[in-house]
Image (cartoon, rainbow, N blue to C red; front, side, top):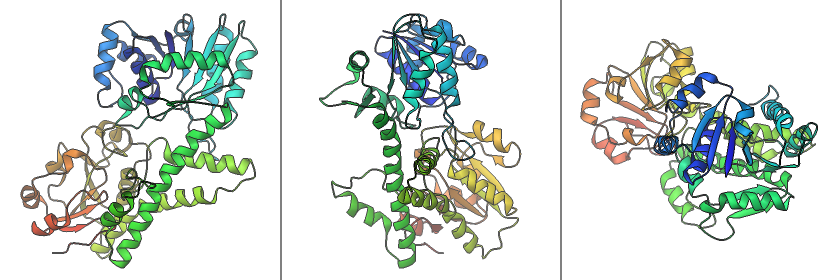
Length: 437
């Protein structure tokens, strides 16, 4: 099929590349001409494991192209994907102006049947709004469907190629059949494609993200209580996850969730509730717990230094909101850096792939290290904010020899307590025993 993908962020670029991988002819369009030029020269603008392989292969096979011209992108397209940003407005509602503006432009260009597919996370009723806008100028029949994405950054390629479910929100049999045909190469078992109405499809995305965020905030609440009573959150997690009704995913305590989805989507859902006279009490609590959780490791750090932290040198491992991505949006690390700078602390930071993004924010305000050991040179303590695999087995003897003070504050619980004790580190984590020297 001939496909157009409007928007080349994480969702758009992964969607376009993975659709090309199964033989479709895909044209990705973006208003950022500089970005388009770089992609035409095979420069991938984001870090996502294995995406570069598919990206280069499909460009070479002439199945993946890039343009800044919307008209050129959709002229031959049977299906048009909208993968546009929906940032938060000042009142926390989702800003769908990009979606609506592009829809207006599409309407002027529709001369034969087109299927417009919304991948963006949008409020309930947006599919209808898009349809109404396009219908004002369209010269042919068309359909608009809701098809929310469930891509995890760091696993996005695998999630697209091997989805656990595909949600299609439409009342049109023609649109559903066309979408089913498009997704046929990715379906590996029965009942993977789920048809529903547009409003239910739009709300499903919010419901999924909110439930996953609930698990994260719940386990963090339990971890904080473990700190008070001397229980071990790792053992509790094992006991909980053995129950099939609960499952093992999203049950790791830490510094809370971040990224471009969970924080924004929960606040948008709360605002949707307010606009419809409904109070999401649980969702409100989840968001508040998460905001507080970012402070947990800093409170431990300040207590360790007895409040006398000004002038200290602190290392920070991890800038991205999770491993295997360069995305630092709403990352707990940013909150930690900001607070440390406010307290008069000198910050040294390292991340395997996110430093260039962080430099755009902090520039020379903090020191960006070349590796994990450069990061801990002469520091008074180390904070771990992201559980990158490369952080999990460092040379502890080397670290001790170059740190001013062997103290680690682990916001992701990546180290074994006995191992830290054996190596004579002061070690504090989330919901586990404190190791003191």
